[in-house]
Image 1 (tube, helix red, strand yellow):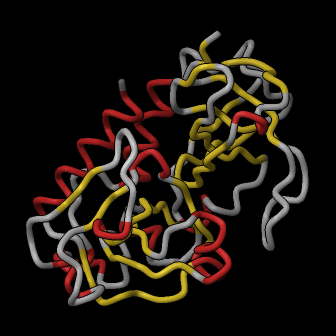
Image 2: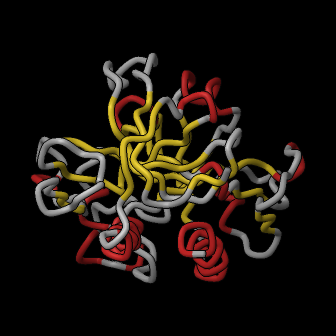
Length: 240
């Protein structure tokens, strides 16, 4: 049985430091077969991230019949969670009519088509497009040392939840289906002069909390051609 975008699932508490300590509803954003993991969006009755300018979709259960929510809720597609198959505890409903609006909010959260931070003087504090080094704890958890920040400019400047695509040295990586190898350009040499290419793991796109899981900016920023390839792959992941 295939799991479909828009389904609302309870996920278990997050056990890592700073994680959500209670079981909570999330909204599935990617199609996946039963027994597979997927990417879900965090949902909350609180407006905390909206106060920082985060993109969101508001769901009123009295108007959205069958949504699976029992209280007015904000869905934050800028706070993505990579959920394993075992994390899908119980489905409570599904968003149907709201799905196009949720996908639009996701594209806004990702800043698709808006370029990188260094090319936008008016958003100098933005982190979008920067290659960051993960904290030691997060490196151990995901098996990657670096990631590219894709959060839209305004919200990313607050250093809250950053959407990242994991990245590592192509020579040191074992690609899987959906990974993107990049060998053209010189931008990744700012991470390490020995890098001849990088691997971008689109299937593992997720959000990290800046303060706890990003150690530093490496000094590298993805170039335009690689960003275009990455954005196209992300759109295929969420919109197909």
